[in-house]
Length: 385
Length: 92
Image 1 (cartoon, one colour):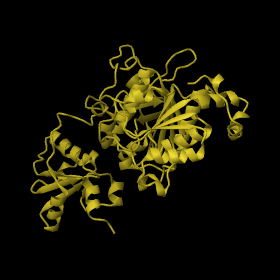
Image 2 (cartoon, chains in turn orange, brown; image 1 turned 60 degrees about the vertical axis):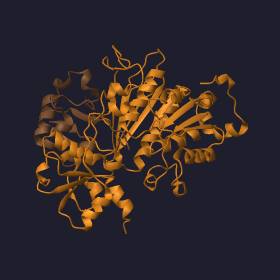
Image 3 (cartoon, rainbow over the protein chains, first blue to last red; image 1 turned 30 degrees about the vertical axis):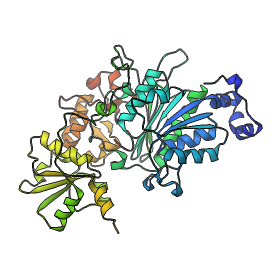
Image 4 (spheres, rainbow over the protein chains, first blue to last red; image 1 turned 45 degrees about the horizontal axis):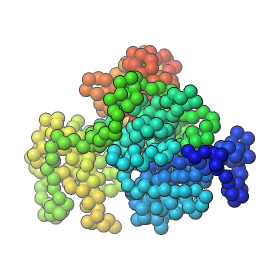
C-alpha cells in the first residue's frame, strides 16, 4: 500500500467521496487508505459484480480483475455489472468500461487469464487484499494457498441457490497474529459430483448481490482498519428463510499450509487436489452426437439415461430416464442390461462420472455410452423452437 | 428435541426439510438419526469409514465441534446443530 501521506485528492474527488469523509469514524484518513490500496478481485461474475461496483464507487485506488470468461445471456440474471449489449464481450473488458464510467479517478488493471498455480503468485503479489468471487473449488484452494504463501488477506464469499457464506481469511491482526484460512474451515473439497454447482443447482439472482456487498464491506474494513473484521468467523445467510448465523472459526494445528507441521510450501495442482484430474481414471466409452442422432432417427433400440438434476431436466430434456448422478448407483437396476444405453448430462462430464461410478460399484458398463458434449451439444445442433 | 439445520445443497435428501428435530444426545447420534431417516443423505454426511466428511463442518450453536468433543459433543434439547458444507459457486 502506498504511503497515505503521499495521497491527495482533487476537488472533484473530495466532492465525490464527501459522504464517506463526513462519517466521524471514517474521515479523510480512511478515504486515503482506500485510494492507496490495491485490491484484486478474482472472478467478475455474480459476486464480482457488486464487489467491483462498490469497491470502485468507494474509491479503492487500484482494482485488479481476474477473469477470462465472456458475458453470456445466462449471466445477466445476477451479474449486474453487465447489460444485454455486453453479451459476447470479454467480462474483464466489459467490467472495466462500466467501472470507468462509474469512477474515472481509480486505476483498473485486467488479468485476462485463468488463475493457475503457475501465474497466481505473480498476479496476486502486487495487491494488498484479494477478494475471492470465483466459482469452483480448485480456484478457491488456489487463491487461499497463494494468499497464505504471500501473506495477503483473502476476503471470501461463496453462494449456492439461496445460501451464502462470507469470511475473512489470513487476516493479520494488530498483534501480528494470522487468522484462519479456507483450509482451516474445509480441509478437503467435496468429491466431484457430490455437491451440485450453481450451473446444475442454480442460484437466486439477488443472492450474490447481497453476499458480494457484504464481501465489499469486509474488504473496505480490512483496508481501512475500521470496525471488527469477519476474521475468525464464518457468516451464513439463508435468503429463503431469512436466517443469518455466525460461527466461530479457529486456526487448526493440522492445517498443511501454516499449521504445526506445514507440508505445502508451494502451489500444487488444484484440479488434482479436488479430484477433477485423475490420471488413473479409465476412459469411458463415448458416442458422438452425429451417431447419437443417427440412432435416434433410425429408432435404434437403446435406452437414454439423463443424469442431470430434476430442475435441469424440467427446463429441457431429450426424453431420457432421469437418474441424477448422486442416485445412479442406488438406482442401477433401472438401467437396461439387454441393450445399449446412452448416458448424458449437460456437457458430458457428469455422465462420464456416472459410468465410472457404476463400474466402480461392480456393475457391467460395456453397453453404456457417454454422450459426448451432452445436452448442450444436442441443443447446438438442433435449435429448439 | 434438538434442532438440526440442513443446508440448501442437502435439502433434496431430506424431502426439502430445512429444519429437523432430533432426540439425539450427541452429534454422532444426531447424524445416525438423520442417516436412518434419510438413507440417501448418509453418504453426503459420512465417508466409508463413518467419519464426517472433510468438506462439512458441524456447529453446535456457534461453536465448531472440532473445538468441542467432535462427534461426542453433547447436544441439549434446545441446541441448534448446523451442518455447513463447502459451496463454491458456479462451476466445479
